[in-house]
Image 1 (cartoon, rainbow, N blue to C red):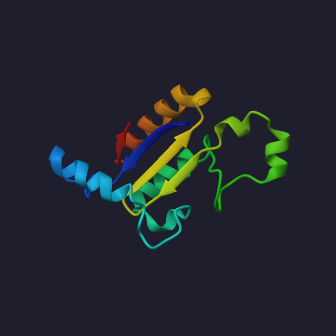
Image 2: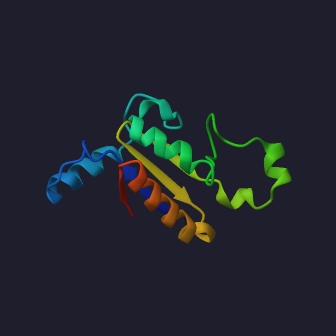
Amino acid sequence: MSYDLMVFEKTKAPAVKKDFMAWYERQAEWNEEHDYTTIGVSSEALQNWFMEMKETFPPMNGEYAPDLKLLDENEKLESYLTDYCIGQDVIYAAFAWSVADEAYELMRSLARKHNVVFLM
């Protein structure tokens, strides 16, 4: 199991709860026609959030994933690897439970900084 959080572009999500839940369910279908490890499909705000987030919580896959040598050199890094699912309007992140508190705090503060919405 993982500790799962999400950020999203606030201009894309409906404000009404009923409509928001339908929008969220569509996002969670992951049926956009792109690779879900590539940050370039997201808005500038989400890209900026990700580029800063990955410095502490590097992605497991994709262009910014650390190489095996770096993982061998830094045993602690493995617990910070994060499974990101990157959409056009949302980024879903699955963290190890051992870093849940740190992930929550950083994700929340970077969401504020980059003007995206944080959802837990």
